[in-house]
Amino acid sequence: MGFEIKYNDGQTPLDENEKEGLKIESITTQGELDEFEQLNIEKAVGWIFRTRLKPEKILTEKFVKELHRRMYVDVWRWAGEFRKSEKNIGVNWARIGIELRTLIDDTKYWVNNKTFSPEEVAIRFKHRIVSIHCFPNGNGRHSRLMADIIIESIYGMEPFSWHQSNMVKANETRMKYIRSLKEADRGNINPLIEFAKT
Image (cartoon, rainbow, N blue to C red; front, side, top):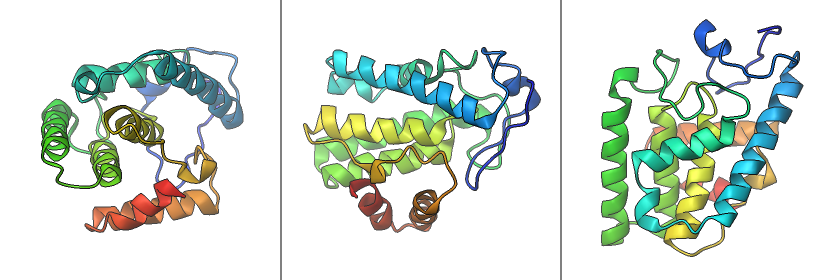
């Protein structure tokens, strides 16, 4: 890789093997990488709009991987594949599949039993999946899109606004997002729900 990736607070560094997975050799700056990833994500969002997502298909490991693959396939060779390295966040990489299955089962239970409001179900899923940290990179953006898909396709409600930000840049919005994630880590999910809705 011809440049050094700059990580913002809350972003997970890639290991050397993961960096080797970059498909576009012409990328030389963080801004270019962000731009290519954003273009790829927009293609994935287009796919979501064109596809009638069935609720029973969304809460599956297959869909979780397919969404990540579609979000990053133009940029990273490992798009849609679970990480095989330890990170500064997330479960042991060998436990990703187990933890994800537990989360999916919990979420199905919440949906079927109306345990929480639709917003809370979607945001609890988002928070848990980002803390599992399934993929080498892109977990935050993937988890936010999963929350939007849950609220829209399972509950028929409008997706979250997330402050109209992709939160890649280190600014006040991203700091507020990180603070609300840390609150959720401590068991208080409400700031993260409020952040998602505004």
